[in-house]
Structures are given as structure tokens and as C-alpha cells.
Amino acid sequence: MLLENKTAVIYGAGGSIGSAMAKGFAAEGASCHLVGRTAATLDKVADEIRGEGGRAEIAVVDVLDAAAVADHADAVAEKAGSLDISVNVISQDALFGPLIDMSIDDFADSMAKIVRSQLSTTKAAARYMIEQKSGVILFFGGSDPTMKMPGLGNVQVGMDAVEALRRQWSAELGPYGVRVVSLLTGGITESFPDIPETEPARKGIIDATLLGRGASLSDVGNVAAFVASDRARSLTGTQINISCGACGD
Image (cartoon, rainbow, N blue to C red; front, side, top):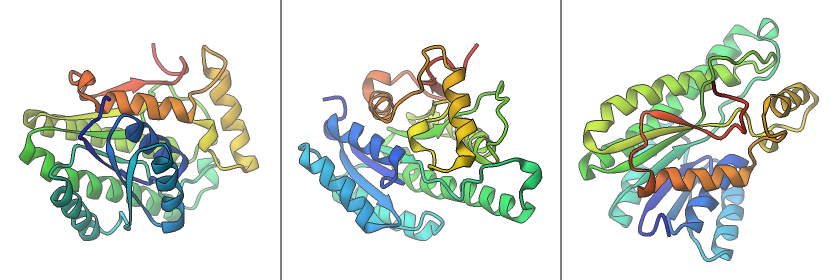
């Protein structure tokens, strides 16, 4: 197994993307710590993982509470002896629609939550990874400078901000043997809210691919597990493109 004896923390594990990653990690032998805001949702994912023979524990933690995030990371590291993989896929108030129609306060508040969430979770993991001189931090969504799709509101803008963090974390953690990588997806249509406002984005994602389909949730889990494994030990400071050809040169 690719991730045998590894400990992974997945923030937002109750959602579609987070659960896909958790299942991918667990299938490759990782002990998964599922973090989110709703115990019932996390329990459902944990039960599915255990039903397949995997290992999963849950914790209800507010990722905007830096002290709570740090305390949880401390507990995981103390119990497991290491903290090897960290990924935060919690979506903080995603706002779809034209920017011209958005409240400035709503947009700014959402962006602040995105940055605060990513900083708190990455810092909590990085403290242990620096000490153990190993670890993988994954970001999700990626940044495509050729993006020309309207109606995404703050969603792609937020991902661009996370990519800027990924670049900086890569430079600062690399000397300690810690890898930082993003999955560039071009959008996972299975994860979009089932509302009329997302239909143009869904169609745009599929139409932009070379394969006539977007990446699936299972694709996300499989690639995330590989990137987090030692077989991908040469990958850091970069995006891994799983957009089915929608993004790229």
C-alpha cells in the first residue's frame, strides 16, 4: 500500500471532495482523521471507510479557530506519533454569480475566511512536519491563468489566493523535507451545488476538456493518494493537472 503507516488529517472530510480524498488515503493504508463541522456527516464517511477495511476517526473542529485546530493536530500527532499528510478542502461561503452583483462585504468576508482557514490548518501541520523533516501538505483546486469562465464569483479567486499560499509554503517548508502540492482540477462537477446558478459553470467545465468529461471524485482520491505517497517524493512546489485537458498549455 502506498500510504501504509501514514497519518492523514483531512479538513472538510464530510464534503464530497474531502471524503473522496479520505477514502483514497484510507484505501492505500493511511490512518485518516476526518475533521469538519458536523459529526453526523463525518460519521457517515468514517463508517464507509471502516466498511472497506480502512481506519478513520472523526473530530468536530472549527477551522477558523486556530487554537482548536492546533490542539487537534497536537492530539493526532501525540496519539499516532507523526502527522504525515494534511489537506484542507473546506469551502468557506463559496459565492457563485457575476462579481458586479456581489456585496463587497460578503466577498471580502468570504476571502478572509478562506485565507484564515488555510493558514491555521497548514501551520498546525507544518509544526510537526518541520520537526520530523517529512510530510505532505495538499491544496485543492489550483490556478489556471487562462481562466475565462464567467459566473464563478469568488470561487476561482479564492483558489488563486490558496495557490499563492502554496507557493510560499513550498519555499519555506522545502528545506525541511516537506512537500506542498496542489491538485489542479478545472472543477469537479459532482461537487457543485445543485442550483441553477451552477449550470453554466458545469457545462463550461465539460466543454473545455479534451476528453469530453471532467475529473471524477474517484479521480481526486486516487491522484491525491499517489501525490501524498513516497512514489511522488520529487513533486513539490507545483500543481498536478487532473483537469482532463481543460487546463494547460
